Structures are given as C-alpha cells and as structure tokens.
Length: 186
Ligand SMILES: Cc1cc2nc3c(=O)[nH]c(=O)nc-3n(C[C@H](O)[C@H](O)[C@H](O)COP(=O)(O)O)c2cc1C
Image (cartoon, rainbow, N blue to C red; front, side):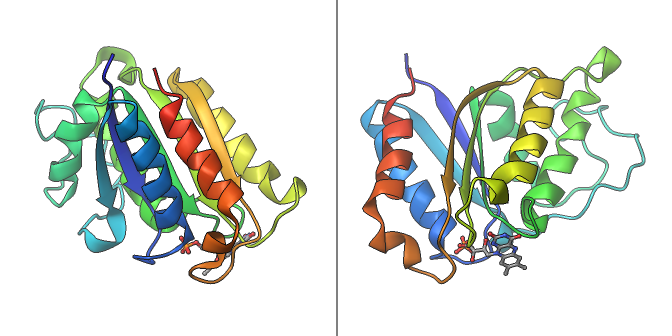
C-alpha cells in the first residue's frame, strides 16, 4: 500500500548532512511506491508555540497563529508517517524542528482529551559525536515522544561522525541505511 510521508527537516543547512539523509531516505521510499513531502523548516516562517491553549477550533488551520504552519497542517493531517529529520543540537533536535513540532499541539486540540492523530514515525539524525552514549538523550526524547503520542517507530538512523557539510557523503553506509529504511516501508 502506498503511504503518505511527511518529512520535517530541522536542519538550517540546505545541503547539510541531514538533507543527504533525507535525499537517500526519499529515494528509497519513492522506489517503494510511497508519496513524500518534505518541509525545509529553515526556509519557512514558523513561530514558537504561544502556549495559549486556544487552538483546535478550525479543522484546516487549528492554530491561532497564521504563519507557514498553515502549509504543514493539511499534509500532516493526511500523513501516515512523520519523519523527524534533524541535526543533533546540544543533545537534542534543532530549534527549527522543536518549534514546528510544538505547533502540532493545535491539531491535538481538535480532539477531546487532546488526543493526537495516530501516525507512524521515523527519526533521521546527523551528529558530530559517534558514540552510543552521544545518542542516549535523543533516544530518550524520541522514545518518550512516540510512546506518549501512541506513534509507532518504524526506524531510526543515527548518523554520527559528521560535522561539516558533505562529511556524510564520505560514508556511504549511513546513506544506504537511510535508503534501506525508506525502501522497507510497507
Ligand atoms: C549549535 C550546534 C550544536 C551542536 N550540538 C551537537 C551535539 O550536541 N552533539 C553532536 O554530536 N553534534 C552536535 N553538533 C554538530 C551537528 O550535529 C553536525 O554538524 C551535523 O552534521 C549537522 O547537520 P547538518 O549538516 O544537517 O546541519 C552541533 C552543531 C551545532 C551548529
């Protein structure tokens, strides 16, 4: 079955290591017959959540703030799979991705009890550090997030050892892992 995949790219570097992971993942997913939409959050006007808890009144544009999240909401609504793609910034996801993700709370506000729409989920992350220990905080965040939302994790690519733009191109195995993950989606 063809699935709809929504990628939220939190990297500010247009040709950075995260983007390379995204390209390889997308190639695999499209080969497997899936539809992919990628939002490069750095190029978009997305404000932080105001914490007003006044969203969820308009099905199409559930947040009170009318910025570029209005492009993401309809795609997110239809998506079967959400891909969180980010560089590791201070042992977490980037601010760009965190900002956008927080704003998805407005979608949960559409439902009684703030129930989130059920999705499958993937994490693609580039980082300088390449030890298992380096990824512990992000793993804890991602596991906490997906378990709280009731989302099913389909896979994670931790691409360590990449600092500068293009570093990841020297290690074909990480890009191959991302491509295989895309291909594995059923
Ligand atoms: C502000 C900032 C914070 C970073 N924090 C970490 C970190 O905590 N751990 C790590 O391994 N790498 C860290 N890095 C390195 C990036 O994760 C790495 O350069 C990554 O490849 C960037 O991905 P990109 O090319 O998609 O931007 C940091 C880089 C920046 C600019």
